Length: 600
Image 1 (cartoon, rainbow, N blue to C red):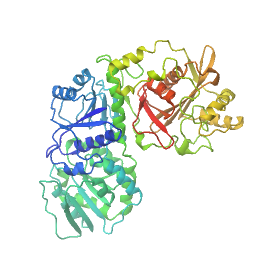
Image 2: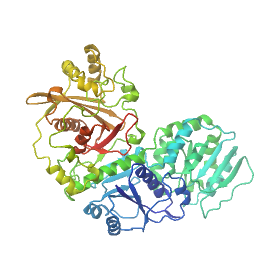
Image 3: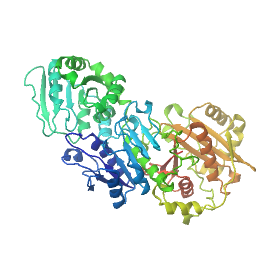
Image 4: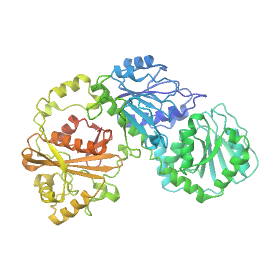
């Protein structure tokens, strides 16, 4: 896709919006997308130097209203626009959608709020706050969607290898990229008033020149803006920061922090982070008028390593660093949605009602879903389905037993007769409306009527026969046959699990196959098996739809779905492409499996 990022940076607005966009740019570029920028982006060489993408390749003129933004996007054949800007108004979506362009927009609680195809609020507690139903399609709310630079994830790994133990403690002071509120002198005064030994590095933006104390227990040093600020965080015993974008990088790295409320729009985020036990609060500008109160808080932190460790431990549980990739994934889904559904008639993913209906809640992804690029284990350690199944190898199985782990369609299974290899569909996230209409029109035959039900212990022998079928085992990571007693124990455990949904699907002629959904922290992963005696009848697509319908009844719309397909399994790839699953851009893993995603 061609993604346009709209943001500004400057003395009054700070650089946080641009830093967040830079993280999205890194994730989009890593996924193979083309990135464009629009905005006022002077004086940011220090930021570009720290990005994996380097300086932005294409910077377009600032577009300051809906008409200009839509015109700019049309001119450069943009597929989606990502806006991180409070002042552009709330009328951006319709002109973009009219041109087949998706809108992703960032808000901080109520600040910067506007309707979008994707709405991102990365603040802790955002997902617990009521939000007016403005017709937005997909809400990504909470720190799991905090867009962080690659440098933050790299610094997290460094910090994991061993936290520093400076004597005296090493302190980093950073009040944003511009220190728009002029807080540095007051923070420095508070650190001096703490009266505790410390080595203090003060990041001084261009145009600022705070006076640093020459004597006292703490030693101060001025440093220029850092291209790899997260690396400096990882080396610090304590960071004193404004309560803006930097907070999420600090959480990701896992650093003890003391926060200053630098602007009114930071109030909700400041309060929730401090209340969570992830940071100490120093108050706002007025609270720093006298240095002693904040100095007392800082002295307690500087003299209590255990207290600092507790803050760091809590902080690192809040953010995993993969939010930017999740945003890019959601934007890819939004493009597909915008292009196949006419403006004013946009349907939800179930296709049964308008997305902007006043009584409808927009879809929301799970707050703690790590991005696909992290490639977490297919089953969490507590979910290991069988003692012989290694958690790191818990890839989806078409058979209901975890030892059978074939790709999503068996190699011997004939593809649907309507989907010949010459008719393989392009990724639906990149189809034009005409392409999609043509693809839908080619599927003229009616789908068979299937019924699904929850599996029971009475299905043990049927499911085992499907699992032990030679073709199934040839496509499995473990080709050994399973005995009935072992299988019954596995089935009994599966039926009791809240994170597994095991279905048997039938039609008028009898059982068609099984669909299994396994929930991990990225969503619900599908595994399907067509009964050996029913293969070749074009039932795989209908089987998958029946499984999705059953899951929708359980979870509602907006649920993230995952399919993992081997790169050589073209029939399975076509099946999931027809169903709207999109490659997440991470490429095959070491075993050749690709991850596909869609929103239910």
